[in-house]
Image 1 (cartoon, helix red, strand yellow):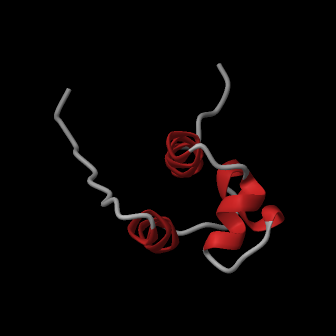
Image 2: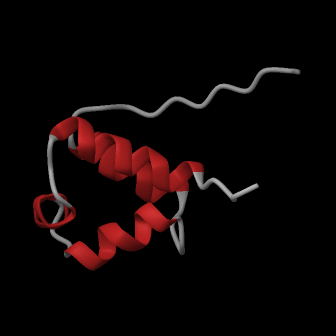
Length: 68
C-alpha cells in the first residue's frame, strides 16, 4: 500500500481549489515552484508552515481525531 502524506495533500488540494500552478502559488507566498513541490511531497515541512500557507489564502486548517 502506498504511503500517503496528509501534509502534502493539504497544500496540493488548496492549490487545485485555487486553480493555481505550483509556480503561481510559490510566487504568491514569496517562494518558488521548487518549495511548493517539496511541500506537496511532504518532505521537510511542519504543520506550522502548512498553517501559514493556508492562512495566506484566507483558509484555516482544522484537524479532527476520532476514536475508531
